[in-house]
Length: 248
Ligand code: MF3
Ligand code: CO
Image 1 (cartoon, rainbow, N blue to C red):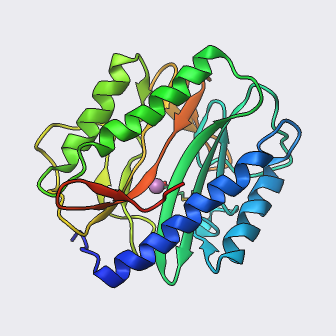
Image 2 (cartoon, rainbow, N blue to C red; image 1 turned 180 degrees about the horizontal axis):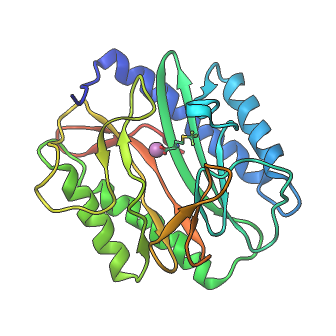
Image 3 (spheres, protein in one colour; image 1 turned 30 degrees about the vertical axis):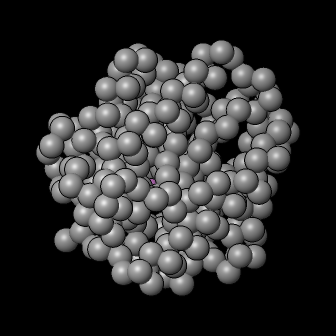
């Protein structure tokens, strides 16, 4: 069952989402060569808590950090450590916060210092792919319309679409029905209705779409070691479109 959020629930999700968006904005100035991912994780935790929320990722199915930090060929679910950012890295921050029982979820990939033109394009195209997917979000469309739009755009730019991980419903739980894959068939999949809340989150690779999991049992990396980007918003489905909950 895909839940429809009441006006009260929508209001709480707007707040949760705003906290996530604000956490992104808060962290951007720190994303410079030399900072450790551990420090970024702690800054995120402290900021989220200062806003009266909690970091949803912490201990989610045993996940050991507060936000997911994934660098270069790491696609998602990287774990903070003593690793320092270096000039030329790209860093994905996937931030989830829970406010009064409701979650917000948004990922964004940022450049560290000067990055190659290839990486710049990857970031630009993956962000555009997110909005291509979102352009299909409205009551009456189907989940397959979203994935179709994302993968069509990604393929046109020769990027690998990660298929092992999907977007998802969001609400009282960080992950709810439906799955929102980044591929699909137009008109297929669950029907979108007013009041549903979903996270759309393309993960696109410069090279192959293939990925595997590191020995830490969390970090997903590209099979060919080429960089990957991740852009995600949590959105409310409306009569004729969507409202971004995780505004930034
Ligand atoms: N933010 C991730 C998502 O988009 C969830 C990560 S779960 C964690 O679905 F346990 F890895 F943190
Ligand atoms: Co998500």
